[in-house]
Image (cartoon, rainbow, N blue to C red; front, side, top):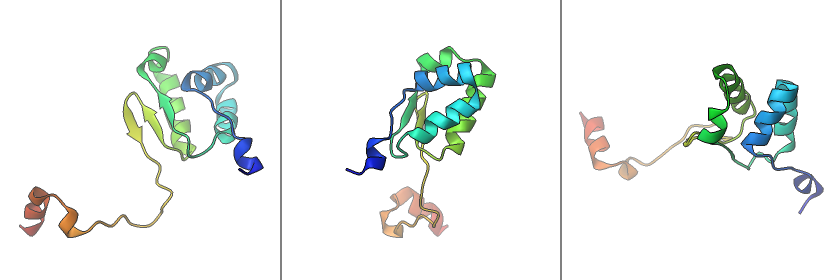
Length: 103
C-alpha cells in the first residue's frame, strides 16, 4: 500500500457538516481533499434534519465540486471519471425500450 493511500482520512457526513458549520466551506474543501476519492460519503436524513436550507445547498454544492460519489438522503450521486461516452449494446436493452426505439 502506498504512503499516499495510507495518509487518506475518513470523515462522516456529520463530521464534515460540523467542520463546515464551525469553519466554513474552506475547511470543508480541505477535509474533502484529505479523503480518498473512492470513498462514498453518506449524508443521511439525520444529518439533513439538523441543517438549514442554505447549509444543505452549500454542502451539496461542495460535494458535487469535490468530484466524488455520495449518497444524499438515500439517492446516490455518482461521479463518472470516464469523460467518454457510455455505450451499451442494443441487444442489452430491455425489450420495451427496444420496441420504442424501433418506432
